[in-house]
Length: 120
Image (cartoon, rainbow, N blue to C red; front, top):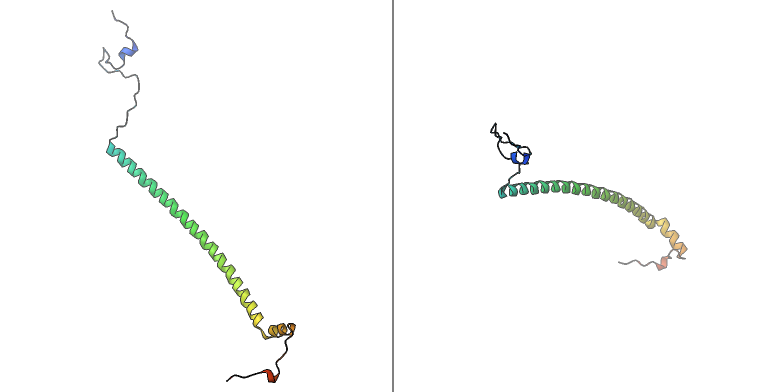
């Protein structure tokens, strides 16, 4: 007579008839890493992360430098315009017509020949 066998008894044992080991549950195969493999993986991750951060940083710096150059070019243009306006104002203030008009407003008049002294 054949006795009833529970499923829990069969797991991990061989089949009585065929001799084949019965595995009813799927076991995950564990990845076994040695310390040297872990160190290698950590080192590679650090290298990749460092190169990625370096790449992003260099692009960011390039963009910032481009913005700075654009800002400085705009400032240079403004300063050139201001310089041109100041040169024009200086030329106007040095003109003889302006000086004569300013002297009249202040009550000055032309010097008489006796007031002029020539130095040797």
